[in-house]
Length: 384
Length: 222
View (spheres, rainbow over the protein chains, first blue to last red):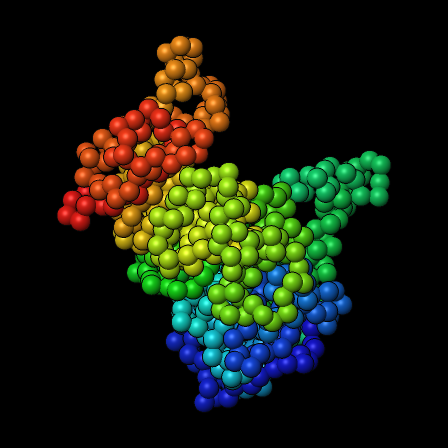
């Protein structure tokens, strides 16, 4: 997990982030990646917000796994977020572990990793840190903010906190508040990590240990919620793994077991267990309506931002109904909003997958927003 | 896909695209340039796209079918999935200059409430509908004894989405009752020929379709 991100900005004690908890976090660092070129009037910036276990490598090879960018279907030359037209910034959120400050970072006061002495952060804190990064980079406003799942929460927070800086916003497969069921799943994951003796009360780095098993179980449980019953059935059914009959034991008899174990094991190489605790907590605390007197519509009062909300029929983690609530709140402000529900059986993960209707919708949204912003003449006609 | 959209520099090309929908052409002429428009039941966005290029409107659409919505968004229009009966209530009052309901009123569960909501949300409403009082409908019932099926009314009685048919006179009476001002009304004959109200006493007999431009009475908002 120890890798040095290429692009990183450091903020000193004097630029400390005042967190929602009241704690001051500083110094802190923000790691990020960029794609494409900034235009002269800096009007073509797209901020991509990653999901819970995502990172800044949206459209470039992951330094640890060697896999292509997690959103290279959405971001790249000729893609809806066209890197030939737009300047894309994708920061790693604070609390995460790919270069931005998180619980695995060294606490300057102790010289040791923060562990669970790291302050609890919120979606709003993540957005404030991103805003500070953009300010450092000399970027005043954003052509578009886009993201799925937790990334969608950041998109909503951006639109609510900085309406005048966000020309367009695309919250995908997300919700304006984390549901009780989702908090419950997160709690299962956190308990799995903390129940692992290797967790050592969060001080595993100091003790030279790593709660890999707990983190793997957390990932396995979460991974089920990213899929759907149909998708699992289509992919695996009750098929057995490299055997003709069940073994009357607890080996991975079924393909679905083997698949989940692989998902769990491969995850621990690229993610920090404490970061998993902190970032899931940030999602749990997210409730945009509560932060605006209980009325979600108040979060978007008078907004001029153009929105495109996207949901997926088989997503039971962030069901369409939750996207519809966002749309209703925007309609209550007569906001410029599109809402697309994509029919698919691939569940929550659909936003990362090859869903042509989502790509077409995003392409239309970005093109019309670019026209409205006067960006149309730069490199057009590469798609369609 | 965006490349299929008509040339924004040539509004008449846009109108030609709608040659087969004279009612949409009439609606397009009723909408003022640079206005804010909500098209309820916008289908695949034909009218919204035309209004955007002809009149530079700030347009929104609501469409019942999700595939229609997805097509609209892919062509760059701001459209949501929604139901006229249920979802107009979400919008604030006076949010739009024009709220359009084209060939959909007769398919709503509560046309009167839909009309009221349209005129709450918008300063103007434009409504087009098939005229159930036309001579063809009357003769189908009178001579044939059967529910009419023709180009403007293509469904059989058992599979029609149209559950609240009305005649032009019915609609005018409803507008009176609701204190709604009819600013403009045009009827279309079967051959597409336009008939202005007032010029003929026979619009309710000869008109196959009608397009109404309505305005809320200032003091009687319910």
